Length: 132
Image (cartoon, rainbow, N blue to C red; front, top):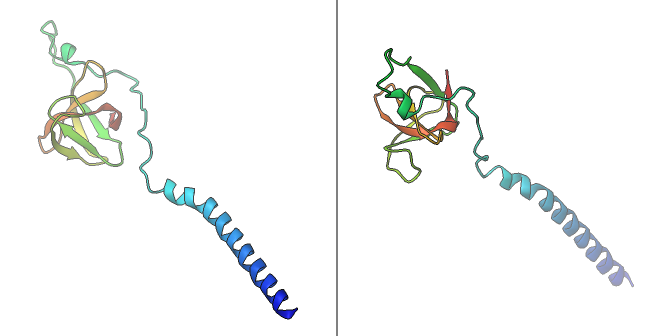
């Protein structure tokens, strides 16, 4: 009789601990894995459109366009590419908070051509640049 009660106690304890461990794992696992992936890409809208390639080089313009600067706001920095395309060759990168000169904007508005302080010139995704 004592052996039966001991087995019942042991089985109940193990099942109880297993249930507690499973509940804790179900609650904590999404929290842990949620921290492993990068956050979704921010969708930033530009309040004032930057000049496009066509307007920046317009021959009818008599006065030079004002120099515009921007700051990298994307925490991971931005890749500088040789043309406005995600498959284009990467020329280098720009760090977070780095100030760049804005040269022009692609026709679709998704890309901005910039020049860094180290004279690296190329295209970056516009969502990562905040005009100053």
